Amino acid sequence: LDPHPLPPWPGELTSLRHDEPSGTWSVIAVHSTRLGPAVGGTRAMAYPALPAAVADARRLAGAMTLKVAVAGLPMGGGKSVLVLPAPRHRLHDDTWCRALEAHARHIELLRGTYWTGPDIGTDTADMDVLRRHTTYAFGRSEADGGSGTSAEATAVGVVAAVRAAVREAGHPGLDGLRILVQGLGAVGMRVARTVSASGAHLLVADVDPARVERAVGLAGAVEVVAPEEVVGTPCDALVPCAVGGLIDARVARTLPAAVVVGGANNVLADDEAADVLAARGVVVAPDFVANAGGAIHLVGREVLGWSAERVRERAEAIEGTLAEIFADARARGVGSVRAALERAERSLVVEPAA
Ligand code: HCI
Image (cartoon, rainbow, N blue to C red; front, side, top):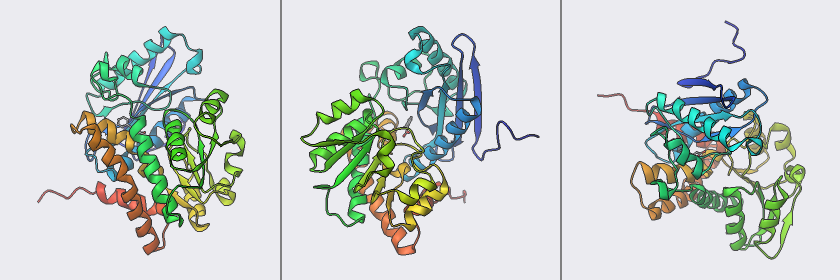
């Protein structure tokens, strides 16, 4: 059969549903349920075509499997995409709610094989709406009985990853380092605030000037970098916190950053980028390790019954996990992304029943 427009995929399922009234497609990709039900957020945005949305959902679902495995959570990996007919801000509220309802009904059909949560384009309030039509949504507001925003724990984990990565690059701490945060959403803004408070020299970039302005208010001296100059700006650490795909092999060959920490999902656009960065001696904290704080929050609070303190400790522990990954990579002469992938694969091996 012609593999196009949907190529084969090693994940467990891809489910697509169209909703006529809202003009949206809901795409659910379940990559693996080997360690438990698949978890991963709902990304809502406009795509050039449906196959691009499917490819995005599948790629992100694969990263979720790795993320929860490395974080030691008893869950699998999935992701969903709500394909909008226009950017969210141009949709009528009724259309948006109708689209969320259709997406929730799709999730409900899978009967718990896939649990969602917030991702780019969806937030806590949207989880409250989803939960009216499906059981399988994490990250509702606390008023609605949920665990609230996962952005705080994600940012705690990302900053822990920055500490581990700059130490690997030979710096004892963040004090005085030039740290560039790209994307000042819920996670990026918190990361910017924390690294700045830790004495770093903060550089920020965002496509939205209002967000840049808010970040400039955070600290005494904040350098503003134009979005198109992010990959050309020398810094001690680059922390992408916007949509993925910032660094491909070509960008990797010249990137003037000593350290890259994946706040966003799928920061590296292709497999070659990791090899190129490793060969150049750039320290890479793989995104699926660095940004696991959100999953730790949602699964920890809502499945495992962890306290907020326990969630914070587990998000801080990303620093130690990364230190182990860097040491392993160094000892074996492989890149940190490879070492992290192998660590995830070791967690994914289920001992056969005796
Ligand atoms: C992410 O880490 O990208 C999403 C986090 C998540 C975890 C569990 C359920 C939904 C979303």
